Length: 54
Length: 253
Image 1 (spheres, rainbow over the protein chains, first blue to last red):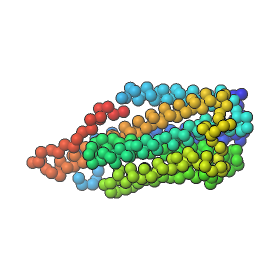
Image 2 (tube, rainbow over the protein chains, first blue to last red):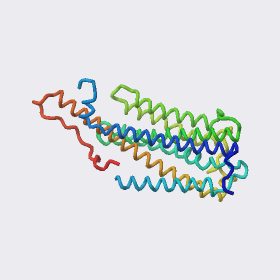
Image 3 (tube, each protein chain N blue to C red):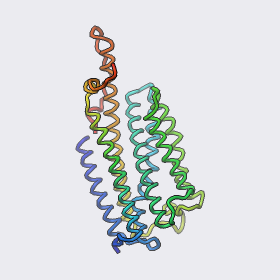
Image 4 (cartoon, rainbow over the protein chains, first blue to last red):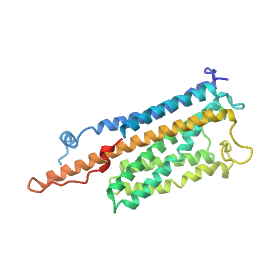
């Protein structure tokens, strides 16, 4: 009874569902990772890079 | 905390793999819906968990409101939990809405219906998007307080979403769990659903902890930046200012 009907309307929608879950969850993990790497700057480095007067 | 976090991540991925295998290759197809019924194994856990994380947000927001004047450092920790829980609510709510819509297109032939469950769930999602937008865009010094008050109102929608299919019988399928006599899941479907629940709950906890750790890092960086800016502004003749360090910094995830 395993799933083997990939080339049907059901199968395609199942692929869309599983694909969308992986994309949304993966996208969120990537977002956190990006924000984490941005915070690697020390405050002193951030001030050097900033054009605003402190 | 780092080894526990890494172990939790690997455990989550292992359980996710088991749930994926159970849902696609082990469990029989649904007697009425056929293979599209397998959407259930990812849609239901995300939907249920998107009604759990708002309560973490609510509790953290209430703690923040209670402690913000007497214990500002503890209040900041609660605020970090609140923003983490709100973001996970939006992520899980998005998946709930997207997978439900895809299932509806295959089974009903329509992407969306303005029925009680779907509309209340969309409203919940919008409320937490509004919460995050408030936090991102508000320019006042009271952003966390405003967001905490908003989260109290947003949480009111959670029981409405849960009860909507019990109060009003519209397009969404009737409750399968706790729906009274004659409802429930076939025994052959339970292992796959249980594995999926466990997998996405573990993954959600991992995301929550990761987002919390990121928010604490951001708070710490902001605090250090303010401290150094004040020290520069006050000049060398003034003793250097020291903002209180977060004691849990060394335990950051």
